Image 1 (cartoon, rainbow, N blue to C red):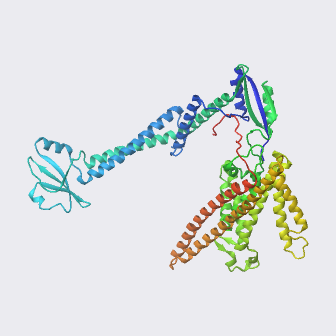
Image 2 (image 1 turned 30 degrees about the vertical axis):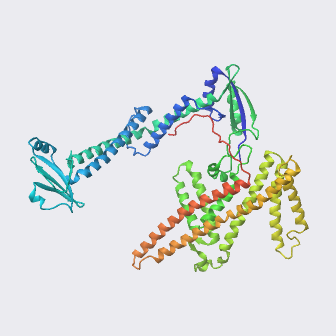
Image 3 (image 1 turned 90 degrees about the vertical axis):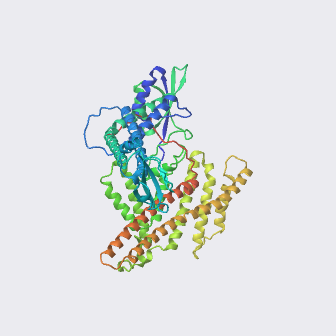
Length: 602
């Protein structure tokens, strides 16, 4: 459900406004309306600085924190500047290494030589010229005809030098190359120096990770400054800018606390309970079970303040759909056990997520037991005497197919009931009649059809009683779809809605076949991996068992990952498309975000 909100309008003398905002920030429960405002230059600078601090924190969190205690003597700005400098330097040396390695690859065939010796020879008129020739071109006779020396022979190329004391003609088909400016050893030493400097940079960055808490405090301070400026600029100046008017929202549960604080500070304010059509912030307040599914509902959108929160309505269906898609009792047991064991050492904020995993795992065990599937093994095909009396109760593929459609139709009709309740609350009972009529038409048709299957029943499909119900429902559908409008307009709109319902209801219901398909594919893949494990293992003692275990672990791990992913995505799709559509969900609300001081946990 959505927590009721109280709307506050504060009237504050302009000289006291900053002090008032500081007290409001300390109180930390008032959500300030900040609509239709532009971000000024000061706020842009703070936002840029927050982004810089955040990126620095994110980077330093990837470093290895040294196990030492030091006195932190540097400011956040100094740390940020130093980290940026080291990052740039690190990148420069990485690029220098790549360039040096490329140059090393070019000079490597020539080996090590002394550049000074070559220069001394050149001063005395003796030039050492460098040549490259392919194996097809190179002739061994050159070694006897010219003063040359082969330096290297690799990759189909000859690398050789010619000693030219002046005027020597070398009319052969070989490519003369530029004299290398450095030797292999010199370039290797250069690369070593680069690596050494990179190691020094890495150690310093690891050391700077000790300042993460300092940066987080700076991030919190900057965020508080930004919030303060944004709230201050959201106020409206009245009475020649001597009175500042500020609008805010307070949850009903905290209303008395806020009033007491405001009264003690002698603040002038106007308070009233928010109406359904106010743009109040949304604070969800659900029971322990539904609260676990709030992160899923927030992935789509917050409801508007006038709407019902759909979280408690889709939560049971989502749980069932997940189990239906996963459909293997063995996999569900792994989820339950893993979440239960991890709970003992998990942080408090992660425990609700682990509880959700336990619930989804339990649902998987339920549907796995329903179909008799455990780690890809169908218990129906296993010769276990203790299970013989229960095999007739396992659902086959035909029953699971029908069950998926039944669950889908139930959720769709339930969504229509929620839509009717929403319309009744937001507008009036008249606006809900059309939706209620559709529910009556669908449910009565299904009920009379089922009753008609019994030969002894006096109630049949389209008998007078059923026709009377259909007639009443038809009136509601045709003439109450838009209360207050012309009857002919309503009738035309009713025909259009009838067409949409006839096509949409069928399509929506068929969408739930994906539950059956995913559950079936999960079981088939598990069975395939079992067959591979026992069919591909060699007939060698010990090795056979090792291969079986490896294939089972790898195969079922892949199946668990893929099935879990599908079991999350497809129920979400059914929830956010089919259920939300039939429930008439509008969405677009904004979450409750009180004006408060951000702090850093120790």
